[in-house]
Image (tube, rainbow, N blue to C red; front, side, top):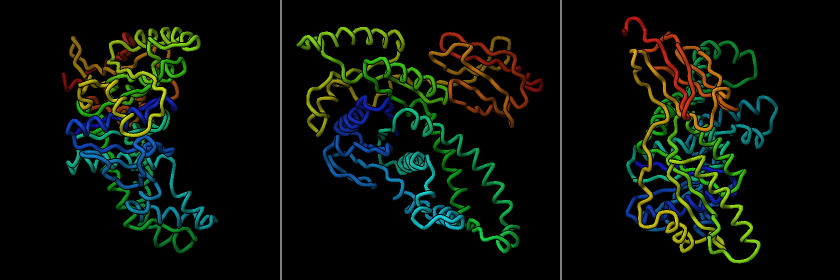
Length: 394
């Protein structure tokens, strides 16, 4: 199953590009579904159709829906929501407020990832396109399998062990509800599902990120950071989509001034991101709404080619053997200097890489349990960490 995730700064035309891609995939004969996980949905506007929280078919080979977290909680995680709501009520919140508070930030991301897993298992679709929220939210989406698994292991593991005692002690002494066995079972199932999702997201041959930007300084700077952080989380950024490009034959004094400014930004983009594949779409004077406009956008982006193509399948992270027989961890870190990185040895066979405002906890293979870090170097957009091969492996 091909998974294409579009991301970019708000207002760059990400939803239009996502919708045009899905439409062209369907026209090429691929069974396609596109879902929006941005709470401020605009996918329905792009296709000019009414959409709801369940997939609907709007064209041959094309299904569409806008994820609604309230619907997801009620239909898929009812036991977890019932417990969280009951706990909130026990703390003095009224019923309506408790229901709202039971939906934690990030639950939309969990639901989106679980849909990806379902689509993979069912084999119903050849291609899945995700129209994401702006960059910060998407980083949480892509890092969620790692973070959530940690919390489930630590927090719910402890809760599960204490439940047997608590039901006969705390529950009779305090007016605090305890999670039911069914709720804990749902949490355990969720943990296993997120591990499967992590494998799908890190499958660089089938899952890729496409970053959308406009030829403007702020968008370029945010895209640089996004590229760095996506690579840090071991997600394959395969191409850039430069949207809303002013055509070279644009008329008028104002447009000529903007065109000259744009040329400088286009040069900046190529110097920054080459040799990354770049797709380009010109600015349209009409509103990007409806199938006809989306077809025009798809023509500009893909021409006669198939959007399902993978432009680069290289994983941002790999382990290799050094010439001296020790082990190297190679991590792609574009636009990063040595002074921008902090490296820590974590607990339980992990290392922590800190760049900007992002932390990535990397679990090392079992062959590197208690391995000593010999060196860490940054060069040509790569962080290379050398581990001394354990004596029993030498």
